[in-house]
Image (cartoon, rainbow, N blue to C red; front, side):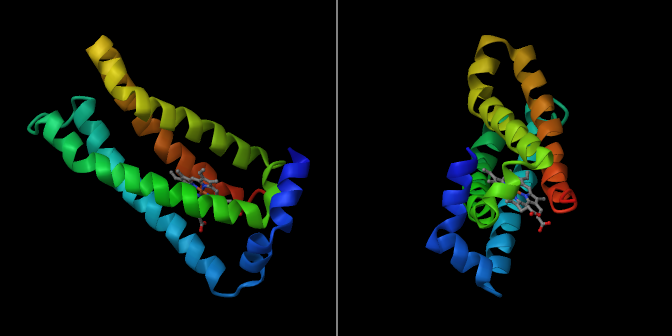
Length: 151
Ligand code: HEM
């Protein structure tokens, strides 16, 4: 893993991003835009799927918000990976970053399986929505803390 991280960090793209005074902040802003879209859509969607917001039709809310969740995920993952390669060998040793990635994998899997869980067991489906509602803000918090965690 350490070798892969070092190789990623040595790529021309990583070196370019690291040395650039304006592309890196733009990539960072792209990451934040993805996060804003993702969390902004996930919160009302999960509140509906958890049964907290009852005056709306869950199928309609899902149809409306799912594309925002997907675009947010694509932007956050794409730009996040670019941020990652600039300092990959530090991030792969950073517990805060590693827990962020672990929870991210769990949250993404939970989102991908949500409808299967719901059709098998509606109560488990609601629990999956509540779980999601806790996981995404936790990932956001861990992401913000990464920057403070280098000693
Ligand atoms: C594969 C997916 C992702 C990767 C590889 C990734 C990677 C990164 C990296 C390398 C940083 C810079 C850390 C630093 O040195 O300060 C970062 C920042 C951050 N990430 Fe992610 N990230 C991903 C997904 C997410 C998601 C889904 C969220 C939120 C739910 C998130 C929230 C944050 C936050 C809040 C920051 C701090 C931004 C700032 O302070 O400007 N990340 N991410």
